[in-house]
Image (cartoon, rainbow over all chains, first blue to last red; front, side, top):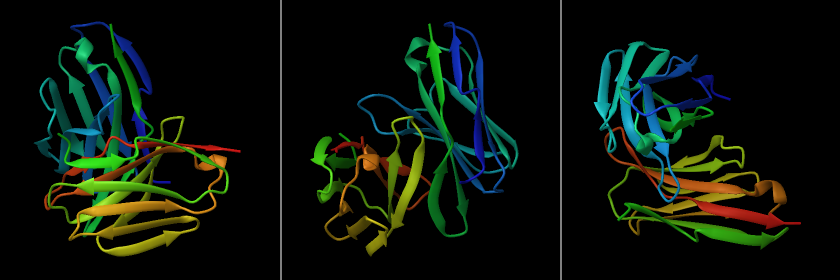
Length: 113
Length: 108
């Protein structure tokens, strides 16, 4: 199994509070992704990173920001959580170098009340 | 509109049956990824393919780039195969388009 962890695994927070989710990898992979998964939708890309301090937006990036100051860590921040951001969040990593296979973390279930 | 469509959405099979899950896409992709999501939520990579066929144990994945179609086959299905199967197409950049998944239940 790819060495990829997410923290926290579960979180309940109130509307308007800031939330940061962490993805940590031990594989030294170049690419890291944040997705959200909601019923009736496929996994949807929020943001991704293609290197330290190099990030780009995905299709559902509004209300989210990311940071990657080290290869191993990719943080997702909800500046002011809303109920529409209740979801399961998955981090994924990809080696690059011609390899396109993604490896997923265990997910974080976030509930915004 | 979803760039990647899977069929069927739900599938129930008897143990031992041969199973086919289909994935069609409307955008240009360079590779297709098959994933398995367990009932507990974890997502596991099954195959990444850009042409032809790949086999791993009882699982076989095929792709026809020209027809924009891929299939995942499970031979001699078993209850432990019960999961959601997801296909994802990689575009020429660094992004993937995901299908909504096929929920498979294999009954003993």
